[in-house]
Amino acid sequence: MLDRTKAAVVITSAIFSRKKGGNMDRRTFLKSAGIGTLALGVVANTFAADKYFPSKADQGLFENINRVTDQSSKTPLEKSHAPVITAPKTVIAGTPFNVEVSVGEVVHAMGPTHWIESIELNIGNEPAGRIDFQSNGYIKPKATFLIVVPKEAAPSGKVTLIAHQRCNLHGYWEGSLDITVT
Ligand SMILES: [Fe+2]
Image 1 (cartoon, rainbow, N blue to C red):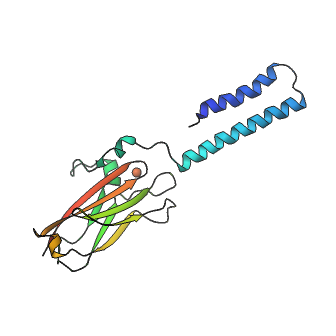
Image 2 (cartoon, rainbow, N blue to C red):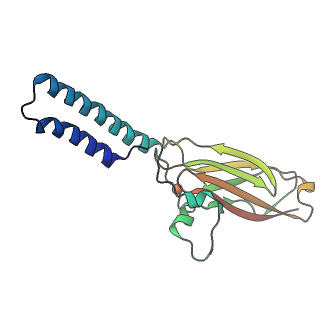
Image 3 (tube, rainbow, N blue to C red):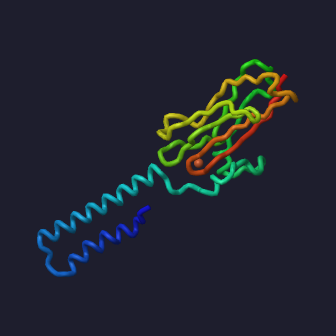
């Protein structure tokens, strides 16, 4: 990526190096102005690219699935990124029920440079579904899934709901909730 400071130095140097030689004729001035305008355009495009394709992602958070470390003392990052699952404590096998997934307990912002890209829900090891979000701010990072757990999916009478979300700057996060299936 173009280094903005270096680009600005190049523009300034180009203009001032023309001045050092003495009086600048009209043609020389127009050439310098053209180079300067072109270079400024490159810098402006670099700023625009940085706005829509941010380079400030925390790569460390993309290497593993992130979870809350201590439920009794969550960090601000955990509060706004760990998926929170809301579902009945007990459900009846074969009967539909709602599962709401929110990112997170402090709802994550949605904007052009920082947003939640998707939410996924698994029933145990089985993927149940996924919702993708746009960054235009029209929607909050919450999703409600209508779920049916068949008896054979919960032979022990318990099942774990597992939610994943992906933040464009802060990586993959997981939250889970155990429910009873009767
Ligand atoms: Fe984030």
